[in-house]
Image (cartoon, rainbow, N blue to C red; front, side, top):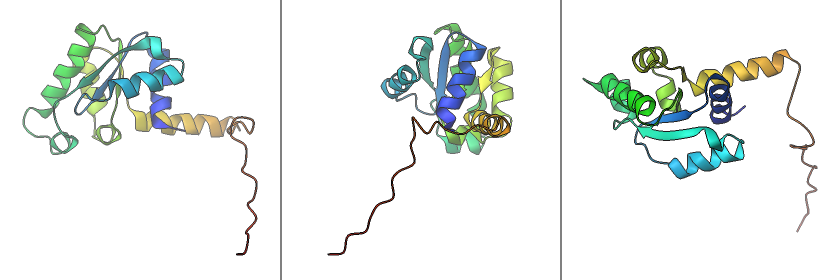
Amino acid sequence: IGPGAASLHVAAQLGTRISLLTPAGRGYGRVAARMRALALGALLASVRGIGLSVMDLARQAPGALDKAAEAARAAVEEDRADVLVLGCMSMAFLPGICEDLSARAGVPIVNPVVAALKTAEMVAGMGLAQSKAAYPVPKPQQMVEA
């Protein structure tokens, strides 16, 4: 279960316009291509950079969470996003970031780490696994001696 796909699919169930929050705000083309591949391209509102390194956020540098909240609010107000996704796994490990930013932005914020874990739990609990038609088991390779 990939954290990006899991979080984007959860976000698509919670809203109709998705923005990703990233440290630098780069990667719009990569995000757009990935969302198109997941049949979610029409939902992409924006990729918003916080303007801080993950280390600044982790150290809780003065004003760091405020800058993240500004980016979240801009995604909601300017880009009309109605659900946000943390676009960096490192950000996702920061305690309470989703709850804090969600309260400030007024929309749900999906944590990719939690989305992947909960999706994996659900899949396992349902007794499911990946499709062998889509992801076949590779044939054993024969060793050839030279």
